[in-house]
Image (tube, rainbow, N blue to C red; front, side, top):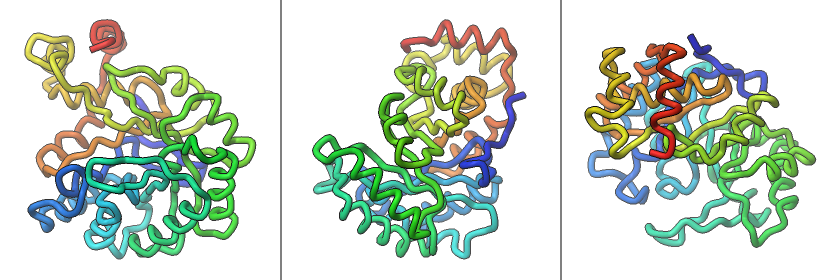
Length: 283
């Protein structure tokens, strides 16, 4: 059975099924949801279920998602790792615009520290590399924050192998957060690189959706064999794909959260894994 833990940066053991907190915000990841209290209950339930890695970003809300986590979980339990991100601005509810000017990244880190109510952020990820700003300046801002003790570890998001290697000339990259799931495997080379280098690969949008998950499809067939749901099989496939993969399924529903966390107990056989890899490719 795949290991249930990954050592982030070599010193932060996290369970290999995290929680993506983005969906606790309002429609379009803007503001608060209709039932703010229930959203806090979802975050608390994740920790009760043993989740000890939560993913958020300054752009979710914007800002409100970090505040939600602080309201729900402070004082934070020992061993809980909250990773946040900066580098995506939200000029409106419909827009996500990369913004990587060093002074902006430094400012956002201080705001995240305040909203989360921590003295140091365990994992701080560059949400996007801003093509309008020299990459080395963006990496330099993260290095400055680390040198000042404001952040513990540094990660990147939506990057290629070449970009990771460029960043590693300046900073120690401990995580990469790219779009990846059983039907979208664009970043296979990045996963292989991360596995070789023992870098966490955090797939966002980890749950497969659409016709491939319908009754009679490959996911449904394997789910029936294992008395599981198609969502659980999708997550089990990710956990089996590589020991450095740390899925962060997000939800605003406690039943769905409990279903997702239970995927950690689903074990695919070699034959089932190969069947899914072959049959679900390309969706």
